[in-house]
Amino acid sequence: AISAACFAVDSILSLAFVRATAYEGGYRSGTLSLLGSVPLAGAWRTFGSMWADSADAAAASTCRGRTGGLSAARFVRRAFDAIALGTLPVAVVTTSSLYAAGLDFRRAMMLWVCWCFATACLLGSATALVMWLCARRTLAGVAEASGLRVVAKVRVATQLLFNAVWGAAGVLVLVPESSKYGELLFAVYTLV
Image 1 (cartoon, helix red, strand yellow):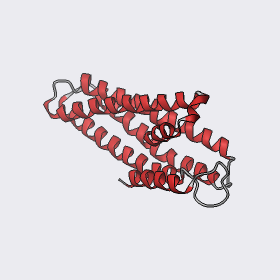
Image 2: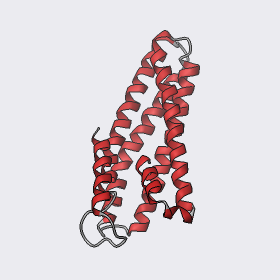
Image 3: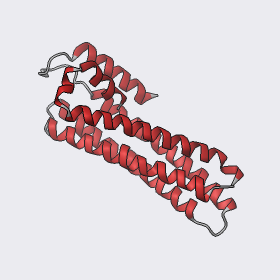
Image 4: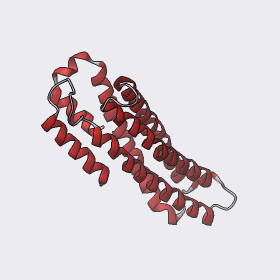
């Protein structure tokens, strides 16, 4: 909820105060969105830990001798830990570049885009796949794991939607004519 509020307020402030291409004092578009990504990463970490704890418990109680559930849960837990721990310094470095401190703006934005792609798209897709495989194979037939199977399916579906929006944003960045459609760009970047 905190990160969603940051994104919403950032969008409102961007529409209200950022009009020119030259930034001379005042609010910089993206400040709250970048900082709002930190609690979002923390929420992802909490979600990953809870799912992994549940998968560990279901696998340990019913899958004697099979460790697939345990190693999948360990991967999910460590992946979300890495996302949460790495997002804070990357967000701070990138936000400071908006105000002419630290890295220059272009390098900071490239760092941010690479970080988001690596974590949200690649690592996010990997965790969604591992969760789905664990729920489908290791925890198949385990009555206590029915909720984990549903969560894994929803996780895969949301990850596919997220990746599609990221792909659309990438296409818009690469197509020079897309700058003519400011409202479309704003909508896609807000979704990302």
